[in-house]
Image (cartoon, rainbow, N blue to C red; front, side):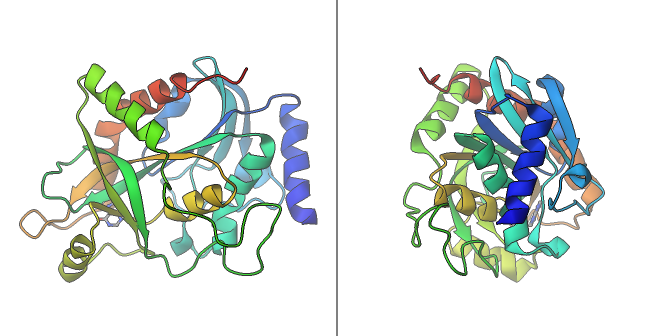
Length: 274
Ligand code: HPA
């Protein structure tokens, strides 16, 4: 684990005594949360020893340390997807680094296709559970007992108390929130009609190509997780149309202020350590 320690040492040198309380991973087209952050330090991924480097143009890869409200956070602006050719170990590497840097909870956003017929474009869906259809898994291989157990529990993969807090924020702010199951597929192609039908049948409300590996790694280490999808395209048979990345980014941009607000308020609502 020499390389891992080098990554951590480098970042700790950059941020000194700054200890982030929360980790945030921002998804496709959802990077604007960083505008709300009083930035303490920005570290481009390519500067970090042994850190993977993002290959998708719409993801700008930076680790941002700063304060959101009065809470210390570390934000991944841009994440690593399995379809880019990274190993699952690389995909979750930053989550493991964030844990060593001190995070106690993880907040994740993503862009996703809406399978539930009640969903509209640019809706926010709080993820209540997930289905893992990724072909690989970050926990496969010899277990690192220092990180977590061989067979981690997934019965409450998304922290129920944070789901309830999000519901409360939605009610108080009259913000439309959907709740549902996210299925993670490898991509990079979007799904066929038959695949959308299949994903609906197995119980998913939204489909995307990320989040689940990072959440599995976080839960392995005992980190409570909250995740939210921005519904960027509709995948029911009667609403399905050709999707281009620009449409996905446009739908994400429309929902971004709401998503940013939700995560900011949720983070502010977390009890402070005494
Ligand atoms: N499928 C998979 N991933 C996605 C989609 C989709 O329809 N939309 C945004 N990310």
